[in-house]
Image 1 (tube, rainbow, N blue to C red):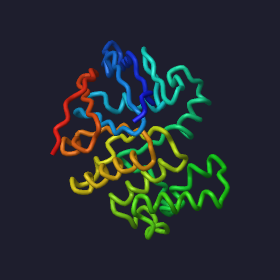
Image 2 (cartoon, rainbow, N blue to C red):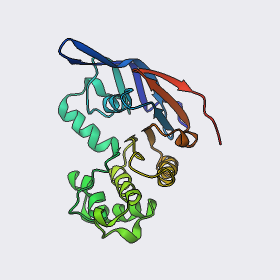
Image 3 (cartoon, rainbow, N blue to C red):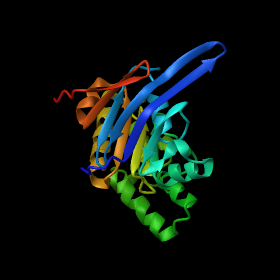
Image 4 (cartoon, rainbow, N blue to C red):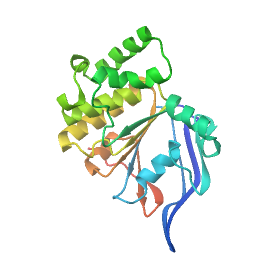
Length: 232
């Protein structure tokens, strides 16, 4: 594992306001994540997990603090630079899969590479490799409605890896899956962290998945702390 962190979060604070009411989603959150590391972020619904991942991935901006990803200060980037960051450096996996219904599995995986105008030959080879990597090479021509929930999440993971991101951000990727399938997806993410050399931040509320992480961070009422791993 590299001695230089890929992700640096310092003093992150985010407050949501509704009239006179304030909800502090993040309270001076600070941590680092390293290349080749799978970090689980756990906490109950509303604890701040999604807010934290959105700040790191450049989907939202904090009220205070800074985020650095792969040497770029995300919190200081202009919108066009944030678009480039989300396209080239960060891959996203969501609980709802986010696949395009009318496209096949292969076409869904190829979408990010079309956006970067990757030549068709290289794009098709990368799609084949990624589908094989997630165990779906036999399902390339099937559309999302023809796949199980676990298979759709595998397609979403392959798509997130299309442009060779350095950081994978997964927000409750097992939330719509049964416990066995969820564990398989978490095991796949761990294997991909090793094989692809990426850093993965995975938000989950499932305590059964914690032993698959290299580190576990717990967030409660916007406060982040590291917790000891309980190996099975």
